[in-house]
Image (cartoon, rainbow, N blue to C red):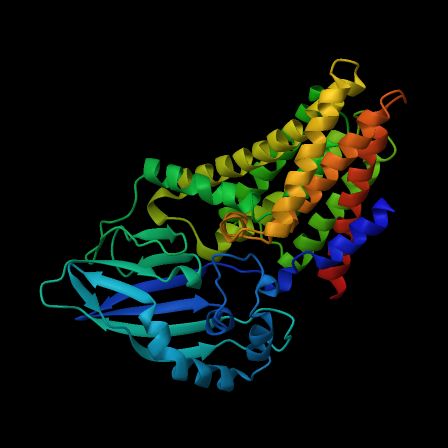
Length: 430
C-alpha cells in the first residue's frame, strides 16, 4: 500500500520540463542609453504566474494559460509580448538617482524549441535613456517576475548580482568598479547554494534522505555524507571551471537513478556495506554536475569566481545538513523508543499532534508558507505527515524487534525509491 501511495504522490510532483529558472539580464551602456538583453521564460510572465511563488509552472493556477502560450508559434508569442509590453514595462524599475527611467522595447527574439513539453527561452531587449550626468543606476523588477541575475557588460570590474524576486540592486556604477569583493561574493552565494537544496532541490533532498534512512546511527550517516560531499565538491568545481561538461539530458536521469539505488538498498540492509561509500562517491560526482548546472545558468562574478564557488558549495552543504537535522528531529522520539530509551505514551501524543498539524497546514495552505517553500504546501508537509504517522505506528509496535526500521525506514525508503523511479521515466521518456 505504501508503494502505491508513493507512486500516486510521485505522479503529482512537479515536472522539471516546466521548472522555473532565474531570468538573466545583460546590461550594456551605449552612449546616453542603457541596453538590456533579458533571457527569460516569457510565457510564465505573460501568463501572469507569480514566478516567485512556484518552482514549476504546472503548480500555478494560470498553468492552462501558460500551456496555451507555449503552444503558440515563435512569431505569435513575440506578437503577444509586443501587445503586453506597456504592462510588462510597468514591472521594471530602473532608477538613476531620483529619476525613474522608462524602458523602451527594442527587440524580441524567441528561441526555437519545437518540443512543447520543454521550456522556451526568449530574449527581450529594451533600452532606457540616461539623464545628463547620471553615473549610477539601480535595477529591479516586480516580484512576480521571479529571480533576476543581472550582469554588467563592457566595463572593467563589472557588477554581477543575484536578485531575489522583487529585490533591487545596489547602485551600479556605469563606468564599472562595482564588482563585489571576494568576501561579499562568498557570503552572497551561500544562500544561493542553500536555496538550491531547500526548497528547490527536491531530487537532492530525496537522495540525502535515502542516505539518512539506511540506519538510525551516526557513523554510517557520516561516512556516506562525507563521501557524497567530497565527490560533488570535485565535480562542482571542475564543471564550474569548464573542465567537465556533461549534458543535463544525461545527468538528470542518472541523478534520479541514484535516488532509486540508495533507497532500494536500504530495503535489504540496515548497515553500511564496504562498497556503499564508493557507490555514494560515484553518485556524488553526478550530483556535483547537477549543482554546476545551476551556476551555469547565470555564471559567477568574474573577479570573485573562487570565493563565490566556495560560498555556493558551503550553501549546498548547509542545505544538506538542514535536511538531515529536520528529519532527525522528526524521528528522534521513534528511534529512542525503539532503543528502549523514550516514553512511548508521550511520543505517541507528540506524533499524533504533529501529524494533525501537518494535515491542517496542507488543508489551510497559507500563501506565505507556499511562497517560502516555493512549492505547494503538501509537497513538503504531505511526506512529513507520513513520517509522523509511520513513527506513531512504530511506537505502538515497540514490542516488535526493529520496529523503527520496519515501520519507518523501510516504508520511507519505498516512498523515495518510487519517486526516483518515476523521475527516471519522466526524464528519459516524457
